[in-house]
Length: 177
Image (cartoon, rainbow, N blue to C red; front, side, top):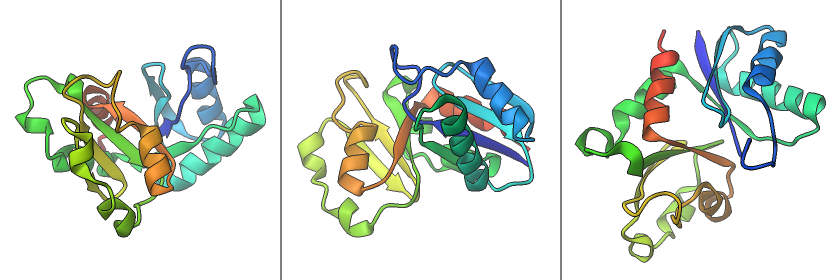
């Protein structure tokens, strides 16, 4: 089975530096096979018999032990990522995918916390929450966005990491069975 681990907040400037070769080596030493990384933002695809969440926990613990960094890791199976792409309320309709992101959460948020968010307050940014994913459109770009992964962590009491739509699609392709 193919799984994906999404590391939160690495390689942003000089903070939480983890090279992709170091990450591939670490994941391989944990016993996972066919290890590949995508871009420098902490996306690793691998084969294993563990569930994606179990693998993510093992990777998180190994990173802490090896690097001393406390980096949250979200796991998704290849099948889950394929479903994320399929479920997107924005994906197929957009001509320019640069403004479409998916925020991956460590768990599904409390429905009451989601309902308490005043969507009108954040326009023109829009979002849709489906399970452990938040689909977000940033019409003015992600650089000045208000609905960042930090927003979701604070408002929903979860851990989160965001990926742009092109990265999400590429990870789904790489993790397809």
